[in-house]
Length: 295
Image (tube, rainbow, N blue to C red; front, side, top):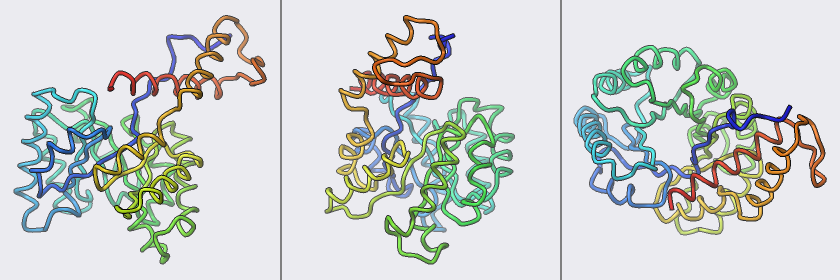
C-alpha cells in the first residue's frame, strides 16, 4: 500500500545558519532581517571569559523579547552554549531551564557522547518541550560517537560539522580534501537518524565562488545546509540548498501518480518508487512549500 498522506514526513528548512556574537547583540536585528533560516547567538567562542555571565543574561533576555514580539515566526533562533562539561556550559543550561521562553534550539559544542544529550533532555525538556538540540561535532571523540549521538533523542534537530576545530584534532589543514572523511562520517550518522546536517562555515568572505563550490560539494554528499559567518554569504547558501523548480515539479508529478495507485513498490516514469524514494520526494516538496511560505 502506498504511504498515507497523513504520515508524510515534516520538514523544516535549515539551509543556512548565521552566527551572531553574544557580546555584539547590536547586530542581532540585522541578522534577523537577513534571509537566513537560522540565527545562532554564540555564547562560546565569541564571548570572552569575563563577559560570559553578562552576555548570557543579555542573550536570554533578548530572545525572550524577540519571541514575544513574534516578528520572525518563520526563522529559528538558536543559542550556541558553552561545552556542558564546563562551568559556563552548566550555567548556560540552568539559565535556559529557568527562562520563561527558550530559544528554538541550542547548538552544543565539543559534544563527545550521547549521555550529554540525555543530561540536556532531562534538565530542559520538562519546561521547554519544543526545544531542539543541535550537536556540534568538532572533535575526534565526538566523530567516533556521532552515529549514537545523532540517534540519542527525538529532540535532535540537526548535526553540525565543526570543521575548524576538527582539523586541529585530526592534525590536518581545514580544507575540503583533508576533512572529507569526517564529513562522510557525519552524512552516515545524520542520514541514519533522519536529521538535518549542516556544514562548517566557509571563511573566505571575499570568495563567493569558493563558497558556492564548497556548498555544492557538501550538498552532493548529503548535507542539507551550511553555516555562515556573514550575511552576504546567505543568499548563495540558500540557493544551493533549495530544491530547484524542475526538481520540485518532477517530485510533485511523481507523487501525484504514486498516490493515484495502491502499490508500495512501482515504476513510474522510469523511477522505481518505494518507501525511501517516496520519503525523499515528500521532503523535497515540504521544504519547497516551507520556503515559499517564508518568501
